[in-house]
Length: 207
Image (cartoon, rainbow, N blue to C red; front, side, top):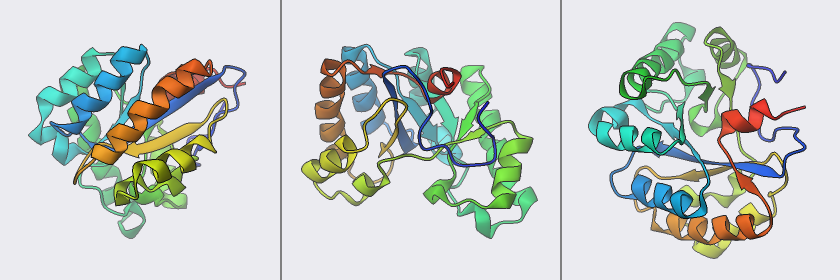
């Protein structure tokens, strides 16, 4: 069984599968564009959503859930959790968990600390709440900086292997480069025989 208190960047699995994840949504423009790519590919993704954004766009949250994607906890206000007291850090996650449950009827199982910023305290909050703490292998893609579609693809392709967790962003700013990169990557992965599954499904396939 994988631990709750350490960042998981890759899942040991025999399945030829990857988990593509999106952070910082929901966003009324880019989140639906992301789900459209997966609809065409008949794959699933995981969306790490910010509570304050969920309050603004609840209908987007419901639509993502209705299509069978996973919604993970990405805190309420996107702070560096290590700069908070344990009680404050926990409150960031509790507020968002309540929202996810209200909007989808499902308690989230996975959590990604903003900026991947975590320490022993954040790990213990994750453990208390029975969350798997999720990292990613392709953080050098830096898609949030809008470095160009080719850069995003190059830094992601090199990290694709069975059990990879890959990070992209659908929230804040202009995410058109990200959407373009993912729209190219997803058919490539399918053609290469990869399944596109949620983080929780990937974790449940671990050995």
